[in-house]
Length: 421
Image 1 (tube, rainbow, N blue to C red):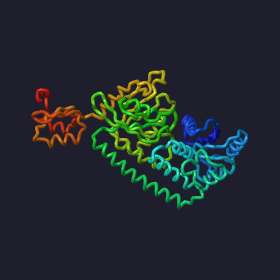
Image 2 (image 1 turned 135 degrees about the vertical axis):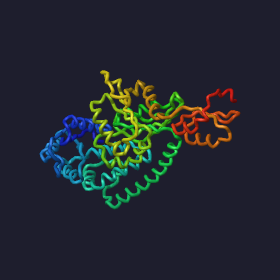
Image 3 (image 1 turned 180 degrees about the vertical axis):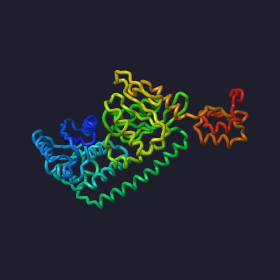
């Protein structure tokens, strides 16, 4: 396993702050992949070099540094073509990977479920297909390790035809799995339980928040949490019970990072599309981070690509326990919390309830026995809070939308249930 790496960054379009933040994020990705020591080498350019991405002089500088510091891995912060990778390897004579390959390596290591493993393999194959030449030389000359997990462990004498066949096979298997997930998703939608999705940058505390909100009585409630990028990859769904006896489903989704490759978003679309069925999105932000605005922008871009821009959203600024100053928020659609220390979680639940149950009126109805079809309609459409059969019929307590409230207005029960028994 590689323990030291040179991290190469090229600044072209970004501001200096954005560039430095991107390089620091590359460090975090390296830590998540098991690299413990790294050195930065950067270059300002007006355009990428077609042969090396960076200038030939910088390539020689990297080569000399690698040789003098016994480095066995070079990681580029930008995506390399197959020919660029092969050209750079020829010069520096150590393993070379780019940011997408590093992210894929982390995903391959963290994938636990069959769905996640198939999605990762699909993304890896799509990434490697146009780079077979560069990756083949890289692996045959320099061995395995970071950037070679998953299908990369197979010998790269595999030709494009066989890779394409495997891609088609995985797509077909994912399609079948997605059909099952669609059935499960439709069941949740038909249950009338509101669906709330946690989204945000990787490592902002989404999984910690989910664990804190789940009822203590639920066995095996917790999802894995660690202080690193992409600690978990799978969507986790949990039932949350409010004090008002209203329930909702809370989904935790895979985190985002900057420069997330499009093919990776495509591969994980089956997972990310869970967000599309949400009644509410909780966009979790690390308020203690130095780059919150940039992280919010990146998440917004991914949500827009998933066509989720019209779903109601609450901005959840997490980790306020790490911030000394009192930061003011602009509107009532934002809230400051600490998931780890249980700060303002009750207020967050109140906000969630206000949004997902907006437009509903808590109503008690009494349907006579000859109106059992009305009662069946209510039971099928709503998550009934309580019901009781009495001498005159069935009494149902439920939250009705405006249309049904007006429709069943004449059956509203204002009496004492005990007197009806």
